[in-house]
Amino acid sequence: MRFAVIQFPGSNCDVDLLHAIRDGVGEEAEYVPHTADSLEGFDGVLLPGGFSYGDYLRSGAISRFSNIMSEVSRFAEEGKPVFGTCNGFQILVEAGLLPGALQRNKQLHFICKTTELKVDNNQTKFTSKYQKDEVLTIPIAHGEGSFYCDDDTLADLKANNQIVFTYASDNPNGSIENIAGIINKKGNVLGMMPHPERAIEDLLGSSDGLRFFQSMISNFVKETADV
Amino acid sequence: MYNVKVYVTYKESILDPQGEAVRGAVHRMGFDEIDDIRIGKYFEIKVSKQEERSVEDVIETVCDKLLANVVMETYRYEIEEVKETV
View (cartoon, helix red, strand yellow):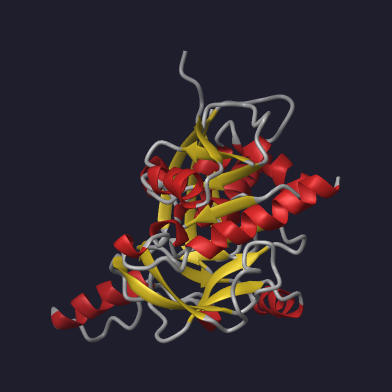
């Protein structure tokens, strides 16, 4: 599979994502600038963490109008894998590809630490190599990661099993229902605040994030082969 | 030409952690009578006259899509027409 890692002005986890794909799971990955207008030749798209456009206005608000975002939306519609971590998650909710919004952390300060993350739904193409309720060690690093949505949206997320990851021990940022990551109804767009790409080898403190990328590769490759 | 002022604030149901922090500081200053502070954003926008679309339509579209995240924020605006001086 060949993945595009989008580089927005202010992205800073693009290298980690590229490394996770190339060296973690041995697939192809290339950087694509936010100014590009085509994702031709790619099978999936990854939106990295960082502070795109300085997080001016709101995190992700300006990036969602980047040139490349119409192609990201096309991938989402066509059922191709779209993954956003941290700022990438913020961009996906601002673009309306995932429901809800990400607010300033309840405690106000930027949090950079290792968290315990629970796999609430392992029946997704991104999480099939995990056990249900398995607790992973994955780092977070964000100032605006408090997930919010209204009651109807929350009921909808629950009814469709769209809550994929929750914080297992303590809620670091004030997210409703401890939500750390969600998926769209169709099951091909996933956004999460934690960074699985920073936990793909023991040298980094944890390799629990590796199976995220392995799940994604094996499920979406299988799908491409079926077509 | 119009001068437009746009105010974006959190919906009342949304906790504003920044406002709470400022309120704490104000209380430490001794102003206990300040019950609540909520922080919002203020925009000054200049819009030229257009035949095809009204200034209200332009402002509301820009607010809905960019200036406010309507999931958690709300907005209001004031429009002032400026006479062109030749």
